[in-house]
Amino acid sequence: MTAKLFLSDNAAPCHPRLWEAMRAVDQADSPYDGDRLSQAMDEAFSAAFGRECAALWVATGTAANCLALATMVQPHGGVVCHREAHIEMDEGGAPGFYLHGAKLLLAEGDNAKLTVDSIRAVVDPIRDDVHQVQPHAISITQASEYGCAYRPHEIAAIADCARAKGLRLHMDGARFANAAAFLDVPAGEAAGSVDALSFGVVKNGGMNAEAILFFDPALADVARYRRKRAGHLQSKGRYMAAQLLAMLEGDLWLENARAANAAAAEIAASCGDRLMRPVEANELFVRCNAAERDALRERGFAFYDWGGDAARFVTAWNSRQDDAMDLARAISGL
Image 1 (cartoon, rainbow, N blue to C red):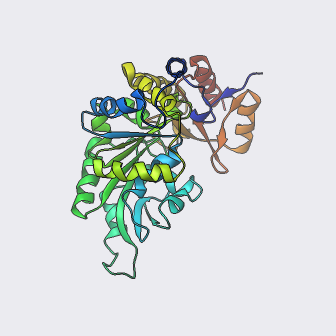
Image 2 (tube, rainbow, N blue to C red):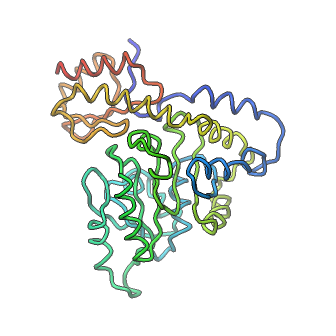
Image 3 (tube, rainbow, N blue to C red):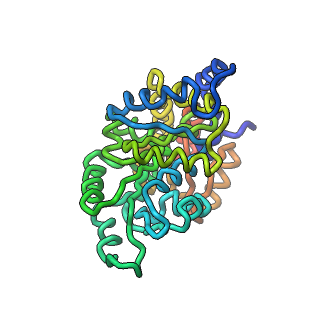
């Protein structure tokens, strides 16, 4: 039996149009980021977001998040993030490594989303003296670790809070496309007035390229040096730039995200009160016990357990409608 994969959108293949784009640049060109495609990224992403930005490619989301934050946070400082944020739970201590020991300051919030109140609960008690870690930045995740999207007004409120306190604002956009597709707003509105955005591509049909978008050119200037020092300035960067530009062309990034979101919505419609979180992107968190999970796996579904009494299902750009419908029926029949 061929497994019906709902493990992760990272398990999905590279989109054919990105393979075509990489083959098209499989010829001699300037090394590192001096090739014509890498040089075209700033203009392409600025057009997509309706706001001037500098775009740098890196190979992983971990590097994108950490290199972005490293431009904002000194080693003696801290980053306010949700206690279940990816940078806290799933990056193997990389923030501490890239930020040379800067601390993550953990905040609460429903569905893994920060609020102004939850940020202030962490920041306000910190004294302005050398004995305490000083907050330098806030990091939010769009969509959140539970697949929930920040609305534009929520981001605006957090951005206002950050500015009032002299903090930078970073967005982990590993599934930014899924959030933008759900919100059905332009990219610039889904991002808000952040200082830097990790624009996710690998989860959305890329092979090995992510983008860091800096809306402050001074931060980008610092990041270029840090990218080299961290070993992420690839000598044949044109292959990474080709993926990123192909994802923007014709809004492929949104087309892929809409397909993944639609598959998730198909499954969610049959889950009823088993759903633990709103389904606003391509992740579903579903209550089911060990015996029920075993029954689903016996029917060929591959997914991850989520604690002892739940499962996480993740759809992708290439999720087949038949597989989504089969899973929906299987869950409704438990």
